[in-house]
Image (cartoon, rainbow, N blue to C red; front, side):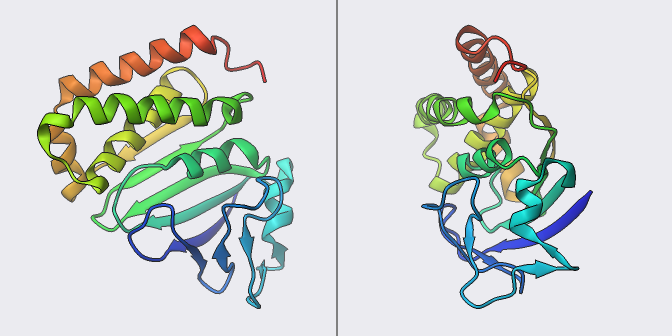
Length: 200
């Protein structure tokens, strides 16, 4: 397993991923199977390995570690990368409050369900949290955790987390029972629409 470290700049979750001397500005417009960064003159090599080649090569089993300034769980863009890039075997997000999220071992079919599942998760979370007055970052935390949990329970990914600090406060405020119910709804939705995670 090879790991590469990349870093979000700023608190906008969809904003720039920037390199720590490894990659440059994140480019969401890039095709998922092409490099999802623009080097802008920065080196695209690390320890003699070209990152884009490693991410396209299934035998490389590359892991990427990146930070989330808002300490949320995985975004839809994170999960899309895990489903689209054959060499990306493990994705780790480190929140600035100390929270850790790990998704690994993506199964075939993940890339086709991430977008609709995340949309449905957003709808459910926003409705369930409407009476709590939670801010955008808190909602990102809830959506990311619920989505990844549902993907894990239906066999699309392995998911582990250690949620602490402000993220834990947000989850506690949302409530364990409410989160468990929401995850069950997502799992049921997935099972009804995409019943077999081993089928691409």
